[in-house]
Amino acid sequence: MISDKMEQALNQQIEKEAYASFLYLAMASWCEQQGLSGCAQFFFRQSDEERMHMLKIFHYVNEMDRFALTPAVAQPPHEYESVRQVFERTLAHEMEVTQAIYDLVELARAEKDHATEHFLQWYVEEQREEEGLMRMILDRIKLIGEGPQSLYFIDKEVEAINAAVQANEQEQEA
Ligand code: OFO
Image (cartoon, rainbow, N blue to C red; front, side, top):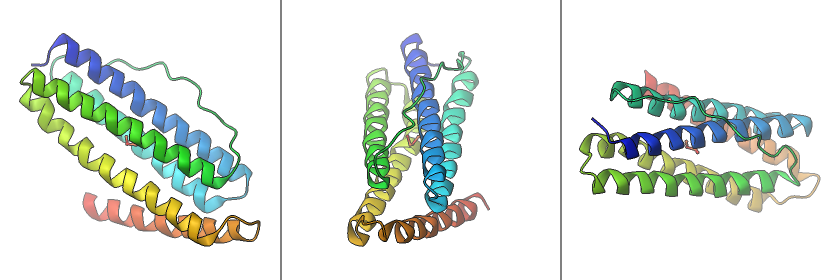
């Protein structure tokens, strides 16, 4: 059993995860336009992952005999100045999502909703990993530098990171 307030808050989180999925899809498109195929692969995978985050909450709400609502999703920005800016915005977005998850945990605690508090722990861990991943990529971009000669190497680095993330996910699923 979850409260009306919790149902509403979880539906808002569904919308946030859906927006993240579309934001990363827009970033994948920008990267493809720039010829950054490694970065594009990274963001296509991230976009799918955010859809999975959305669906996990969606199923939870319905499982708790409440009503998961399909959100209206705002169009994300499509223009970016640089690959660094794309990853900076990604990190900033992930930090916002982390705060939203923390707010949900606080609400679950205030309502003594142990089931939802437990359910949300998966997201707490996921946000820690996602923020860490984006910080690592930004550190690599800073190390490689951003001159025109660097873009190829940044793209290759992100491609390798993406392959490692994907392999790790497949291992966890097996
Ligand atoms: Fe759903 O973790 Fe990113 O936003």
